[in-house]
Amino acid sequence: MVLRIGYLGPRGSFTEEAMEVYTKGINIYEKVEFSTISGLIYAVGTKINEAVVPFENSIEGSVNVTLDILIHESKAMIKGELVLPINHHLLAKKAYPLEKIERVYSHPQALYQCRRFLNEKMPGAVLRETESTAEAAMIVSKTDRPYAAIGKKDLSTLYNLVLLSENIQDYKENFTRFIILSDNDSMPTGCDRTSLVFATENKPGSLYRILGLFARENLNLTKIESRPSRRALGEYVFLLEVEGHRQDEVLKKVLGEVEKNATFFKILGSYPRWRESYPPFPGGRADASQTCLKHEAEGFS
Amino acid sequence: MVLRIGYLGPRGSFTEEAMEVYTKGINIYEKVEFSTISGLIYAVGTKINEAVVPFENSIEGSVNVTLDILIHESKAMIKGELVLPINHHLLAKKAYPLEKIERVYSHPQALYQCRRFLNEKMPGAVLRETESTAEAAMIVSKTDRPYAAIGKKDLSTLYNLVLLSENIQDYKENFTRFIILSDNDSMPTGCDRTSLVFATENKPGSLYRILGLFARENLNLTKIESRPSRRALGEYVFLLEVEGHRQDEVLKKVLGEVEKNATFFKILGSYPRWRESYPPFPGGRADASQTCLKHEAEGFS
Image (cartoon, rainbow over all chains, first blue to last red):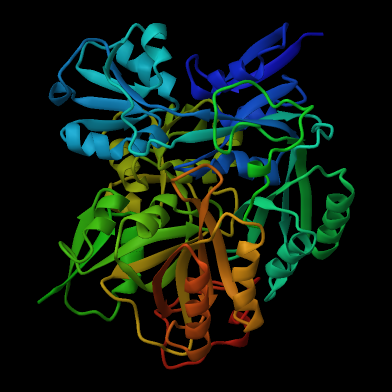
């Protein structure tokens, strides 16, 4: 049976690029395009075997819809991660001068990430939000008005557009981390990360005590995030990411203790860490045979 | 001079409602409408004296743009908070049957919060995102197509619309917390909250140690949130909220220690806690003369 991999479309999206990086070395697979993140995640295990989903961006933070569906609504597990640099460019059908552009279309995050550029160079343009950067390019390719889209370079080829301005994002250090979802997570490689979510009693010191379970064993946390419990304002579910695999002896013991002290507990998955991501580096998938490099073994715990 | 208070418009928005609750008892003030959260926050101290800004919702979590501007770009301080219940209703120009509705307009958060209702009752309708629920009502009021808007009840009067369906949000416990921004925060009342942001060295245990400074003094944390540092993926700035006022003896000492151990530190403000908010209750502003109630003195710290 052919592996079916879902991604957030349309063609030319950053998630499609992430999927292409992920599938290097997989000879036969079928790409399945989805138009929403929720539809994509719900389909894991039924319409598709795996999904490539955006998880967090270095400017915008976590993709809340991804996180909330994994916490509350899905049984899919994280089996991998990958990190891509994000560069935004201004594209249009013709080489219009910037001051003539009447509208700029893009995904809200892309518009936000280019806010300073837009304010300074084209203060008169009206901003219009789209589902994706690729949808923006598609709209612009079909009009004869002086409209522009923000997105990645490949869109100019895909939609026959001219590059008006390159690398227009306000922060040059702009990376997005994607996760690979599947029915199961991955086997230990010696350089892994584990993502889990939990809730605690609404009592003083309960979060501190749980973080202490990790600190006592010198386990490095690489991410902590709070999301609403959806039961009451001020009640949270926490996402933690920690170095190591859930089958590692020490981490396994700590996770057992966390579960005992939590009112809600769910492991989202253990998976190989993207090797060149901190700091990022162009290159292929994690080499599972290597051990972790020293500079990667850091966290704020 | 007349107090100028800014809010996120247009007329009929939830933020306008929050402003009206906040200004009960203020006799003379001038309302100033803004169309974006960023414009509203930037104007504090210049075009306006105070701003009423959405801060977090019990389903969606923090309003990231508010948080990011307070962390990175603004000197405004939090001088107050208030909590409103959020109820969504379906509105249209005529009493169309639900299955005839071709499009539903609303703010993305409102569309998301009514997702189950929309999927079940009107799966054929196309969803269109707007800047605000009020903008959605305005669009629907100007068309002769069978379009509907999601928003609060008052919009039916303001825009002459019919209520097609009431309380359509998926989660009934839906509250939004607003903050009041100004040049300065508030004086101690005996029942206060303090919001601060900080970053730590990227070393194991550094967040745990800072949380320990609060735990050691039995200071209750009521919110923790991580936001990207915007320098590198995996580097965060943390928002903490703690019971007490920054001028209280113990909290003052702890905040001094946090500042010493942080690579970045900023107090967003100390302000009276919204009295009836956990659990929420209809009613006026915090009564500064009362001490905190027992059930409010909880947190996860």
